[in-house]
Amino acid sequence: MFALDGGASEQLRALLPLDELRSVGAFFTGQTLAQFALDGIDGQLPNEWKVFDPACGAGNLLLAFAERIQSKPKSLEEIATLESRFIGCDVFPSFVKAAKIRLLLKFLLNMENVTGLPKNIVEEMFGKVFIGNGLFAVEHLAAATHILLNPPYTMVPVPHGCSWTKGKVNLAALFVEKCLVNCSHGSRIIAILPDVLRSGTRYAKWRVFVEENAYIHRAEPFGRFDNHANVDVFVLDCEIGGNTGRGCQRGVWYPTPTGTAHKVSDFFNISVGSVVPHRNPNLGPWRPYLCARDVPIWSEVNSIGRNRRYKGSTFSAPFVVVRRTSSPKEKKRAVASIITRGEHIAVENHLIVLSPKDSTLQACRRLLRSLSTAETTNFLNQRIRCRHLTTHAIGELPWQQ
Image 1 (cartoon, helix red, strand yellow):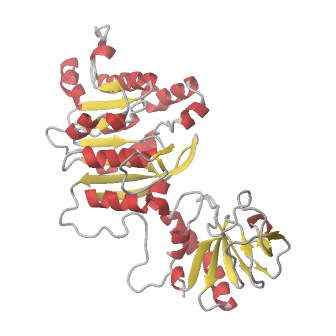
Image 2 (cartoon, rainbow, N blue to C red):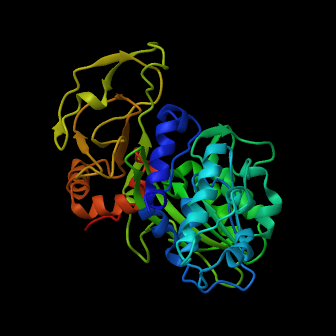
């Protein structure tokens, strides 16, 4: 049972340095997360089901899927008729071998007598679990009824022809795009993805692309991936082409104020501080300079003790600043302060600036009280679980009367 309950992942981690795993975004799906991801699979599978994991690692998601099939094989002959429906690939040969062995062990546990097994049974069984790059396994994407996916989370250059972003992009987003484009109508994609895809401003067009090509059954935050990977993830469960006639999918990614409820952005202009300390030259007029490390939290700041030369955008008090760095583990997500006095203030880019549209200190004080509440923290923990808050997330906070 050690090999099936996480032991294989621990052994593979021991064989490969953590830095190497991180460099390629290779982390193993824990049993709890795998079960959470497949909650939508209830065992009612189509007669000709076929499952494909294009970044299978040690096979944890394939094993979790095997738990949900209705008929468990009880002989080698029955395993042989079933094994071709389990398809997976990974770029690491050791991962592929582990996945094949674990799938075989999973089904052998159902047999009353496992003596007399062929010597080459590992090589003969689960031949469709292979070494390869899942981004190029188009034929398997098209043939599968279910795609299970925990792709690498590394940043890579955007490929030619990408319609929703430029520059560099999280590789996980490209894996999902490849599935959406190449999977057959009606197939199901269940993916474990970094939370930035669900909540980050930069991936807004990617989310629209997903909505246009699939019906989203679920986009649910899970929390931190595991103790080895300091990243929060969510589960995307969607059906290719299943959005026909189902209407708008508003609020599927994260909570949004509905009806006539007001948002913080209705009362404040919101932007990120424009000073990038090690990039902007010390040129231009002397300005009061606000740094995140200098601002006492949950307080009113009447004077700014630091100055620098700066010729970019500045702010005039009163305004509220919120620290961009923020973890879901913190008791309060939107750590804030009020700047009560000063003009032409240069603000570091580690701070989000909220300037009241009515220019009053009263509005700032009201906002500070709102940001300190449990309701704000709960909203942000659903809205964005990345380590940096965004202006959009802060702007969408419900305005508490």
